Picture 1 (cartoon, rainbow, N blue to C red):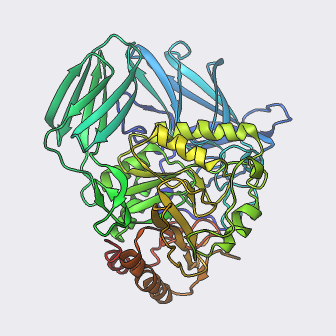
Picture 2 (tube, one colour):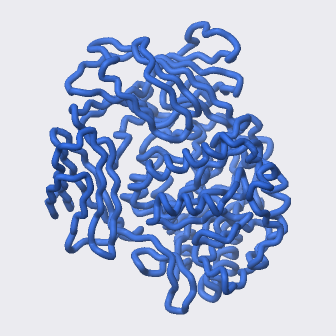
Picture 3 (spheres, rainbow, N blue to C red):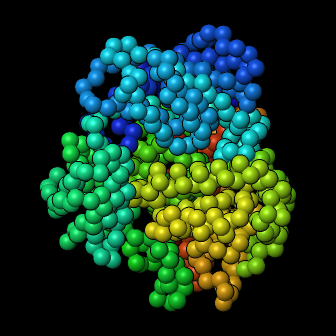
Length: 589
C-alpha cells in the first residue's frame, strides 16, 4: 500500500495541529489547545502496561501516517496516552473537552480519575477545576476499540479492509482542549429558526437558574436587535432578514450573555420541508419553495489522517471544490465530522444529508447485498425488501440488545450535537440494511427529537414505507422511475448512483487492485460517460417524472475505492471543473 500525503499533511505543524476553535456555534475567548505531541503505548489488553513506547501527534489516530505511529490498534489491544502540559488558572472553573475518542476511554488528570466515555463520534467534557494544577499537569487516557467485532457504531472501519471497507482507526481523532468559564456559565444553546413567523427560538442551558439573559443579534458587526429575558428560552423577532440558501449562505451572529459569561453563536434563517410543486409532484422544499438537491456521497476519509482532516484548509478544499463543480449538497456518509466541517458548510453554502453511523454485528450479505439486488430500481414495490422487525434481527445482525439500545443513545447524541448546524437538512437513520432494525420506530424517534428536518429512514434498501424519501441506490442498471401509489407520495430520490472509477498512478492507495462500479482508463472517456449518465439518463427523470434529489458516488477516492472525482490525496481533480459545473447547471427544477 502506498503512503499518500496530502499537501496539507506535508506542511503539518506537529507542535499544535488543527489549532482552530473547535466549537464555532458556541465560542468563548478561552481556548487552550492540547493537540500536538503526546506519549503513547499499545499493549495487548491481557498484558500489564509496560511503559510508553514513543510520541504520537494528537489528534491523529495511531493508524494514520500523520500520527507518526502508523500502527493498528486491534480489538484485543489497549491504547495508552499521556500528555504533560503547563497551565495557569485565570477563571473560576476549568473544563476539559474531547472532540471524539474511538471507542471507549477512561481519563485521569494528575492521578485523579475523571470518568469514562463510550461512543467514538461524540464530544464529551469533564470539569477539572479541582484536579488541575497551576504549573505542570499530567493527563492520561486508556482506550479500547472493538472495531467490527462489537455491535457499537463503527461505520466502514474494519480490520479486514478492502473494496468498500476501510482501515480502522482508534483513540483520539478530534481536538483535545481546555477552556475556563465563570462560576455560573452557559452549558448549551439550542437554536431553531422559524421563517414562517420571522423569529429565532433560543433555548439556553445554564449552570445557574437565577441570571437574566441578554441576546444580541448582529449582521456584519452591526446590532440588528437586542432582547433581555429572565427565563432560559426566548423568541427573537428579526424584522427584515435574508434567507439562507446555498446560493446566498447568509449567517447572523448571536451573542448570548448570562451573568459574567458570554458566548458567540451564529444562525441562518432557513426551512426544510416536503411539499408539492405547481404540478402536484412531491418535492424537497427549501424555504417553502421546491428545490432540487444535487450532491455527492462524502466519506470524509483522508489518505494521511483517515477520519481526521490534516487541516481546516483541507476540509474547506473539499467543500469549495464540489461547490465550484456546481453541486449544492453533500451526503456525509456513515461518519460524523468535527463541528468545524459543518461550520464551513454553513458559511460556504453546502446542504448536508447526515447519516447515522452503522452498527450491529458483522454485516450480513444476505440483507445487505443478495435481497436488495432484486430491486433493480424498476418498480414502486421493491422486490427483495425485508421487514426489519424482531423476527429478522438475526438477518440484519442486530441480535445484541445493548447494541440496539446504544443506537438510540448515539442517535440522540448526534441530533443534539449537530442540531444548530444551518446546513444539515436531512437525517439518514439507516443505510442499505447495515445494522438496520425497527426503522419505523427509528423514524419516529428522529422526528420527535428534530421535527425541523427531513428524514430518509432507510437509504437505498429495505424500505419500510415511512419517512419523507422513497430512496434508491442504483449502480449497475438504469434507474427506471417508480410509479406513484395512492398510499406512498413521498419524494423520489436517487440517493446513490454512478461510482465511475478511474485510478491514477502515483495517487493510488492500493497499487495492485482497485474498486469501482464501472472502470475508465482516461479522463475523456470518464467525462463522456458522466455526460451520458447525467444528461441522457438522469435529466429526463427530473422534469418528466419528479426525481427530486441526486447523490453521486463520490467526492474522493478512499483506499481501494477509486470512484472519486478527486484522488485520495486530493492532488488530482479527475474531471474538469467547468465540465462538471455545466452538467450540474442542468440538474435543476
